[in-house]
Length: 56
Image (cartoon, rainbow, N blue to C red; front, side, top):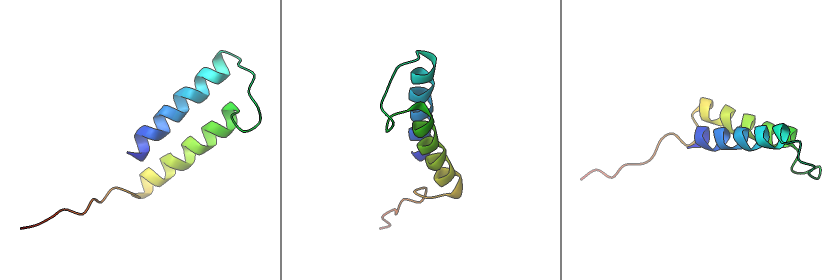
């Protein structure tokens, strides 16, 4: 799930950069890309991968 969120953020950062959209400092393409990299690192580390299953 974190990998998908990272991919979406990378696409948004690419579109902001490719369209040369003027944004404020919070939503710059570099900041969005860094959040995407952090999510990707969490995904690779295995955070959020294990879901508890109910056994009967």
